[in-house]
Length: 237
Image (tube, rainbow, N blue to C red; front, side):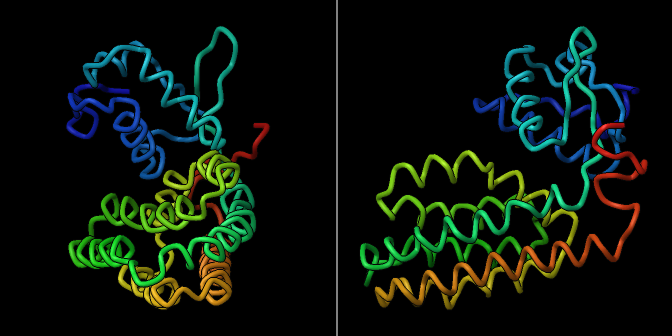
């Protein structure tokens, strides 16, 4: 790794260091800057980004939960090749969780779905600008509003544990479908919530997530050897 190249010379100075570091690492894994099997040298990366090793290690732990990075005793962290099924397996779980959330949230948000409308408009703006990072931020915020409005703390904790933000960015960056189409797919759901129709909102949300999961799976199947596993490595390689 050459820390002097422009792509790797970004300095992080904003307060939420862990999330910013996580985004930098995710970008580099997705665009192939860090190839499967490549070691991530913590000291060198911390110096490059101008941060301490503590938030860097926190970011690496979160990426390890997504099976994008693996740690080895006395050898540090390295990028691992992710199989397509590992990328898409979240979708049936999310679909079930968010269906429950939407059924409970719709009556609570009936007639006051402005937070959802704001996120849809923000998704449209990000799609028009081609800004995947901002698009994911508002896409995930839309779903987080519904999950939080369910009032079910256990559901919220499980949902947050899925790391929906990182997984959404992973799949959208791999590019399955147009961002504008993804944004508009949220509109019928928003309308069902506005009407307080929990049953319809739950059904639409489940279908939305399952459809996206199928599109991701089909896109990965059409591109063998690409994506996360560019080096053809399996999970145990």
